Length: 205
Ligand code: GAR
Image 1 (cartoon, rainbow, N blue to C red):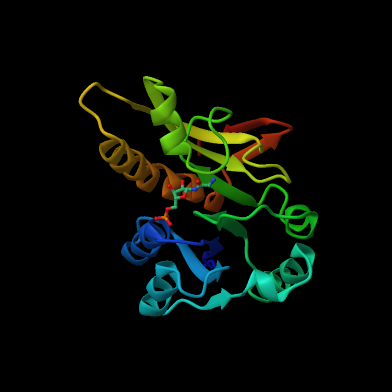
Image 2: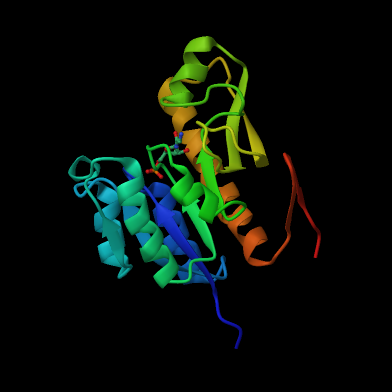
């Protein structure tokens, strides 16, 4: 039997996307194995979710290190030890340095809750809501050294209607994330992603 595609998930918060991956891998909807959770917040609910699912965690305190590169070298060693094929950022609220970005170029992805390049950075759903746009959405992109600047892999639009509130918009965005993100990871697992500079295509298999 061919070995399963190995993913590591980085997350700092609730971990609802993490949970989607747990459920999708357990049900077989996604043919992959989550081999590690990386978190910068020991008390984040996502850490408890990993424990409950029996998934290894690497939890670190950024304040205990002089610079980002120092903890990223430790993370890189954990990833290499587990032969991770794809790094999946899911609400990991830290910029990465070249220590991780260079090692995982083309093999590290992020989900962002807006149609990039609109509304990068923190509180993207709220930014779109406050701006008053009629269409926002989600983006899955490759990770480079910038803030939500990597090449776009997939996007899904979400409409903002008159009857929406910020809360209902958040719900729609999160529901869209749970559909799209496992699908994108499955494209990687099946070798369907081709990257040429900023142009990412999904090959049909
Ligand atoms: C998700 O909505 C994700 O798109 C966002 O954080 C949330 C994490 O939720 N990421 C960013 O804003 C990255 N810039 P979760 O912890 O419940 O999965």
